[in-house]
Image (spheres, rainbow, N blue to C red):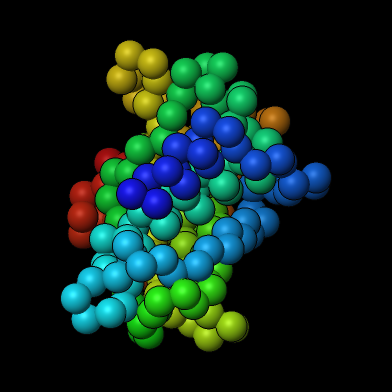
Length: 175
């Protein structure tokens, strides 16, 4: 429930934009493990990582100063696909950071990397293919979203090979 409330706050009352934040600059969200995040083995439940990633993506949009602009158009983000690899556990009351950055985009989706770290130690890495929809559920092209946020059209960098292969494997890449 805590993460759902954090997401609502991050989405409907976004934090202030970071002056000079660019599309390719990392966005950092700092969190702490709460009791409700834990599973029976006393470490963070895998589903909680995904909820934390939702909050961090909303903060990323806020850091870019794009929350209001997207809302005015009625555009909102949804996850088309995601994958995560865990390396270490997070346990009760530990502080951790989620660093979100854009890897690139195609005609359909924007690809993000979200890394979890604790005290400089790598904990987990998630890759997300995110889409944007309009007020009536219509699909908004990723290049249109990027151009709106950046203030002008820009070309996507080449996706890392592992991300491009994953996008093709889960059939989320533009056809």
